[in-house]
Image (tube, rainbow, N blue to C red; front, side):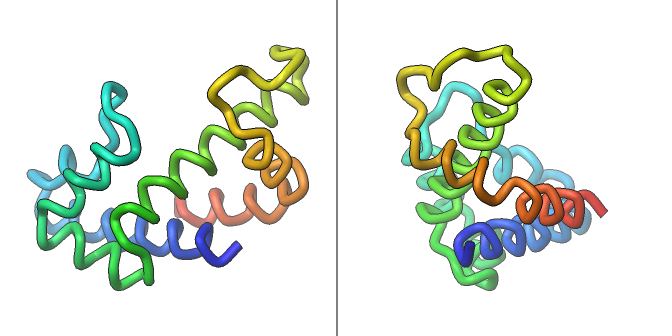
Length: 116
């Protein structure tokens, strides 16, 4: 859960950074056409963004991979629970889904806190 906590803290840091400089919004958001490595490279390329992530104890690569794993796992777990999916789709790591299922309450609490 340490990486998740770092991911949440980094998102808070990035949110504060974007509030100060809205032009950085694009630099801090994952593009739907890029993978985690490409996103991490873009994060790393901006010193302000990389510093905000580092203050949370993560590298840009850890931030991008954690976000991808967390969001994919949580979305898939929710779809399985609701019946929208019958099985884990190809490309989604079953360990990420299991983590989301086993930590559902704690993750929901952290995500709610992030929105405040």
